[in-house]
Amino acid sequence: MEGTNRSFDQMEREQTVSEEEIAAFCEKMYQHALKLAETDTAREQIQKVGKNQLLSWKLLVEHDGAYHPTNGYLLLNGDMGSDFRINLYRKDAATDQNGVIDPKERDTDDTNDTKVEPNDTNEEAILRILRTNPKATQKDVVEMLGVSLATVKRLMNSLQKAGKIKRKGSNRSGSWVVIDQKE
Image (cartoon, rainbow, N blue to C red; front, top):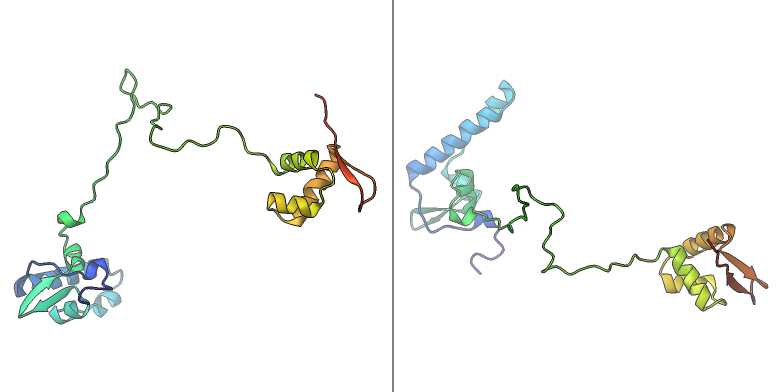
């Protein structure tokens, strides 16, 4: 189970560091902390760290008297070796004859296209439901649209006020009439 449940910065590296390199690293951290301290009181409270603290913080690992740095040690030391490099790959931008990038020219060959037709609004969906099933109740519309009953009541009330739908008959046994407006 060696190495499991360790974060990236605690992973041990194969290389070794000498006692002198560790002392120089600790001094570098101390000087950096002093530089970041904003008040004299804060500067006085800063203490130097040593090899033992680096071991307890898992910035160093000791095996048979040899000290191995972890990724965290290397990152703090400014060693951004090949393991820490990130490469970004971008497609070549389409340019016009003057070398200006054309924002309208986009390569969409490898993307999934979306539907071109616009989605129905809830009001249009209610009108469509009532055209196909004039006896539909508000609860039926709720189930078909997947919205709340309050939303359906509000939308149907606004459709009635706009003169787009009308109730024919009683509330229980009546039906809805969709009024097609000619423009």
